[in-house]
Image 1 (cartoon, rainbow, N blue to C red):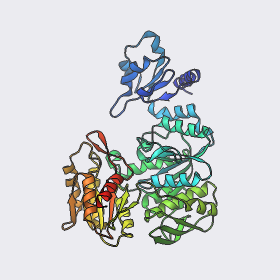
Image 2: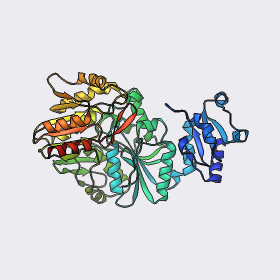
Image 3: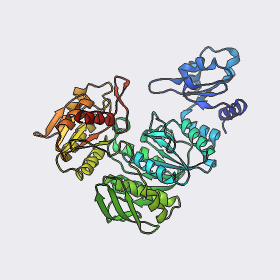
Image 4: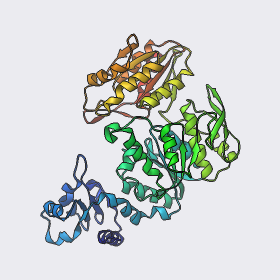
Length: 487
């Protein structure tokens, strides 16, 4: 054990404090971890933090020379409370495990990664496991012991918060914890120090290339969850080439598929698509299985395959799995239908990648007797190369397009639309309305009985981000307001 880590543990044992990364949350007796960030340098707050009683500061430096340059005037009696550590960030997982000892607690931690499906699978597992005990959830729709979730800023929090949450839940009697693990989290070390009972993979399609650069680097980030030292068992959906590639490197993985006729261990052999949901017969290592759920959309077949594989590896037999999945409820903002008094159905979905949008529209088409509308946009300050692909996916599957804003952030809406236009063929029915609420209202007012309107891109989100400000807004609220105007 390194000397600085020993000092941190001795300090926390003596004071009963905690280790924190946010200077605003430091309390007397805590350890403040001061790191440089993309926008804010935590080391700029060292003097402020050291004004509190008995606070130990551990700050990152590249080398001893940088530590000397970063030294700042502090009271002589306080210098022993400031530790400079080279390359501190990669060591935070070791620190978190030493403080919280999550891996020794018997808590079964399940990590879910992939471009789409993480939230749905996490919630399906939480619903199924929560019928027999306490299950924690960390993800896009919130964090907490199921079903009492609180909003979270990131899909996957920082490494100290993750370890702290898991330790707290274990002390409260939780047996399982399901965590959405984003590519950013894996690349930035936010799950370092954790050993996962199960690692689950959904699929991979274009997303976050503004961060990763290309698909190979995006895949490499996801692949980290499946390192043998990090995850005990793995469930991999092999319906795309990325899943197949991942499974080749993890020979002990349970392979699953959402397609009839596949060679995976968990695979459907009969699918009945009904207005009220999916009835599926499965082949599994635990015997034949039938699932009758209220879920819609073919992408949910693959989500169910991953869920079944995880439950089986956790020790449930086919009868238990069937019974647990019978009561599954759809996830908020994921193919969420809202019937309207004019005979139109609006469907709210989080689809924000070309692949997800295509699949959501195909699922909506099954429920469309008239025309299929799509209200969508592309986020500002993100991967511009994805924009024409989003437009092309929508144009290929929908009859009418309504292009609108989707978190423009600091980018002009007109430039986002210009980037999208190459994906839209001439003659396509198209309206461009910047106000998202107005676009939804006009789409609903102009639709006829039997039409379906997919409102895509925001799902559960309760804000629109413009110029660094998150303004209160929800697609569900906009649809409900439009419905009231029709009544």
